[in-house]
Image 1: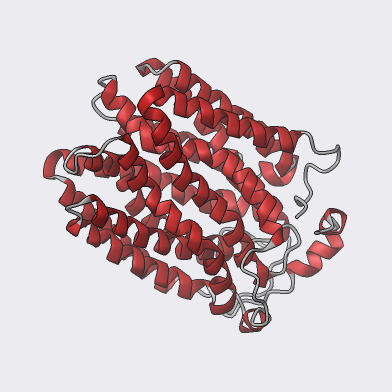
Image 2 (image 1 turned 120 degrees about the horizontal axis):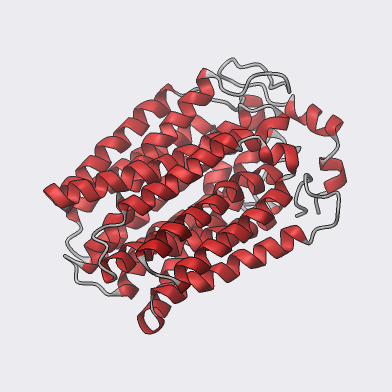
Length: 417
């Protein structure tokens, strides 16, 4: 059990923040050092390239399965969710590897695997081959994502970790804005194969940027992890479950919104996906300091309520106007859930444990993105797409209830293991 009182002690967290001297030559972080450095930018831009490549698949995979491959809602959920299932299984290993082998090595390895799997979509003439490529892509994403977030927290002062995660994770949502627009545009003009090639070329950029990015974890810190064999870090489990409550609705949103749009004759949903990303990005920039200022637990609990509200609107009013409104409200909640909860997870943590914690918490994100489309796909057939969003709203409310019911004074403290 982690002692939340000890983890909230500024003296203790300050001492631990000074424990990691970066092998790339960076000095130990200090509370008054700036956050946005060339190293931080390099990691963040690498994330942007990686997740823009992944964003190409968001609106195109469901249509590819339902169109050329002739699949139904169940097989759409399987194809979309396969990516997250392999990523889920890889996350704990990815966290340990990032702590033992370094962040930069995992950034490069994850990018290389993603490039191979992305170009492998060109061979996906059957559902089985497509699922196989999606599984491999999930492995690459797990390695890259965990290493990138761990590197971002390595480079941040202790009292600005929430802000660092907010800025770094902007790349994910910018990718979710740019990638789908590219994907729908390319598929509409040149077909699915051209979209897979474009995604692969963008992912090549992630390899180059990862090679440029510096190592942020010292050899001494890596050596300290060689005796540990535990894959799941206790400190990441409760935050992971809370992130799952928020990510469950995102799995439904990205998997079934394109099909809902086709059902009601919208002619494409890239505009909604772009609006979702723009709202998240804008709020992450404007409110980057909020997790550190007003209390991450209070902020994320309120954000989960907003997410539930948006999902309820989407499920109850599946019209053009309803989807626009639901997207704004849902995105407003989503903007603050992940950075706030993850900042709680790494309060006072030794540098060489951050990868493991990110990997443990991150596997619950993949559980949501893998299980949500697969299970809700079974519900969508008999009950319709609206029901998938309403069920997802319940998940968000459960997480909000836990966070907002915590005792007074614990809003800014670490979540107990």
